[in-house]
Length: 202
Image (spheres, rainbow, N blue to C red):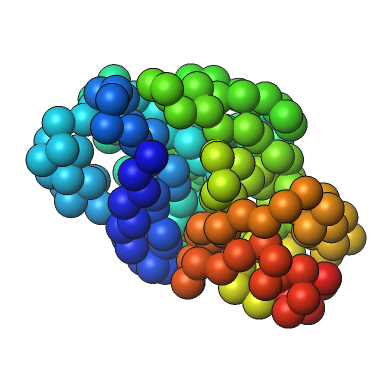
């Protein structure tokens, strides 16, 4: 499995392109911008954008999703964040932006498996940053969106946020057996074993 990282958009969001060498399909996690760069990369490695996996519905994670949808990618988001996907109000308005409404193709729930080519992503619903915030577990990796950061966690003061839910969600992650590399929505990567010790909500 190959993971390519792009830092994109207005708030330096981490976008991840995940694919295997054996399959043409690639998954794009949280394309909050960078459409041209990501498309050029996919062409350079002879892959197609088959799926856009959104950890939540904030614009800085969804901004380029509609463009990949036009290229044939299916857009996935948790059902609880469907209402805010690409919403013109909310977080985008704080930056003076009017974001076109995004219409996801597939709404997922906790514990579902999303298969892209020969790679499987397991959904872990982790509300706290938003109602539908979710992490994707793939092999020995967790794509944690704005739930879990390096020695930190996502803000809970936006619409749909909850500090109580965030604490429960992080416990759910910390209780997973074994260790995982954690790829967050912003900032540097970390590991679950490191966060079990150093995260303020551990």
